[in-house]
Image 1: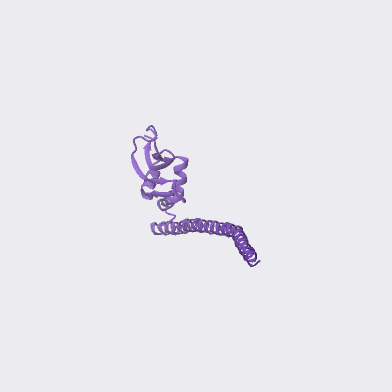
Image 2 (image 1 turned 90 degrees about the vertical axis):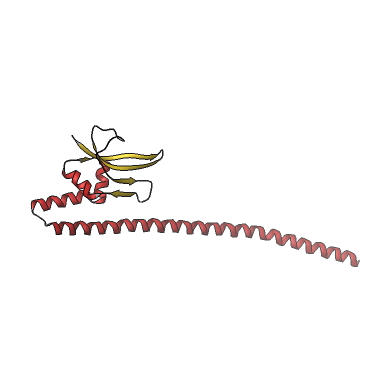
Length: 171
């Protein structure tokens, strides 16, 4: 029975949400699966991925073939690296502790990159809000400046009309 690691679509129209599953290749896209390995939500930025790395590695070692998108997700979360390192342990090139140390170092580096991206997105959003606020302030000042001379002219006309009335009364 050939097994694939693939995405199973859930969610509503226009708002996809995927399960990452190990399934028989003959099963329908959203049909029966052997094991749920995780979830993938592309609606958030950066995308949210929850993955059982050990379960995915177990399926990969047993011959499961990931689809292109699933391969990208597995690579992103480090499942392919962990499989590679476990192959090195099997061959005797590494010890289990060395492999685990390399994998943990990679995870920390990846987490730092993801956090940097999230911080960059937050900063860009804050900059955009600040620019919008400055533009709004400029528009408000321009509107106030345009309205202010009209008020001064009305006041000047009222003063001139009072002076004229006062002058006429004196005569």
